[in-house]
Image (cartoon, rainbow, N blue to C red):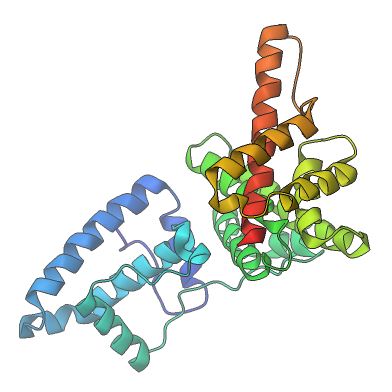
Amino acid sequence: MIAAIDLGDDPGRPARIIDRFFDEEDREAFIRIFKELQNAYEILSPDPFLRDYLDDYALIVQVYNVLYNYFNPEAERRRLQRALLRKTDALIRAHVRAEPVVDTLPLYPINRDIANVVRADQVSERVKVTNLSRSLTVYIEEHRQEQPYLISIGEQVEEIIRRLRERQISVQAALEQLTALSEQVVAAQEEQAESDLSSAEFAIYWVLKAQSIPDPEAVARDLHETLIEHPGWPHNPRLEQEVRTALYKRLIPPPQKAVSEAAGPMQAEIRRVRLLKETVDAVLRVARAVAE
């Protein structure tokens, strides 16, 4: 399964591994085999006959580590440790001390030049998508406290990757959308620097703006005031329901984004209600994160 990959220890190795296992079916097949090998190693180690296979096994674990870091959606968000069993983890730690390996790609800088940087990268579009989504995830995790509007952008990153994995969009479309989100991060930074909204208000404003709510700045102030009037709502279901009801009332009429009467008034109304709920849910997710 990995014989066809050039696993030479050079900066291009992570890209080659990502390219080989970009398809989820291939990754899952490899991970199943890896888990079986790992369990066998945990049982048999430290049997002397394993010595001749340790380097090969360590290489397989390093491939797994690359896949975990780049394709596990929780890997960056929660800074989880690798899901390696005790003896395997000890082997890899010893192997890395003796022979440092390259198992990560340089993160893309999230700045105004991001589109040019991604375009100039001499790797496949599949690797670009994988590394750009990781770069955005890392950036968002590092800056979400002082820039809470990044939370809603992070949700959009996850949605793009979900649609890509379910093959609803192409790799090229995913790359274009992720690049656009990267540019949106920079634009939001610049807009916030010029805004007199608080960081919490601006985070709500960014959600409303994405949903095409009229006068999003004024509405953001009102919604934030509603949240302030209900302290403790994130931990009190009754208060949260009161807040939700108040937000619904303030946002009526619901957002007009993607709403069409062509399918009939009843279906159009259902879509309006759905979009209203999505907006309120997004506002509360951002506000909850700010409150934590």
